[in-house]
Length: 271
Image (cartoon, rainbow, N blue to C red; front, side, top):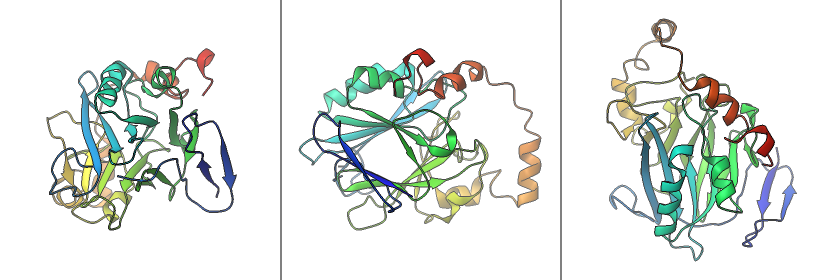
């Protein structure tokens, strides 16, 4: 497996490919807390943002102590790109990545639109998704912003390419750890999952891509106890998921084709 080491110049134009180490190392290295010092007594600046039409959460993470204040967005939505970029500017951050947990079916990703508005931003998605992006990640890869990193975990089921991004484990990483689970694990619910998220410590904070009941965060331990789907045995879980009788997603015919090309039309897919 290869990893990429990009230059830290402002143009982000040069990189070298090194073999065979199985990690992605991306530009900066460092990590502030913008809320709850008890939860994250480090350098991580963190914001949870919400798009009401699809009930989607977008997450902003940044290293506010690094001179360049490098930042990334997880699961940006096209409708709220201007809001998110305005916040990035207000906080004095330098956005370097727009990353997705999977190819969404209920909204169009904002990654492509962000790239047209902020030169140098790189889009990231799972290699298994078969979607277009600047960078493709696989299980075990690491995405760095300063000294903080997100480790990539495969959590397929909802889609074949579903990923969970988990903050690192170490003295310079946020504690408790944070897991950005996309649709694989929701608060008291799930898309479809292979249960790999439950190997994390029980105090790991769970930040899903969606919530429809007003919840914002949970923990792995809580979901193991109280999730009405995932607290069941495998056969009961399979029966529940096979009998959900969900309606056809209203955005799927627009969202999926667009998200396969980073949220842009094929004619603009210079990604």
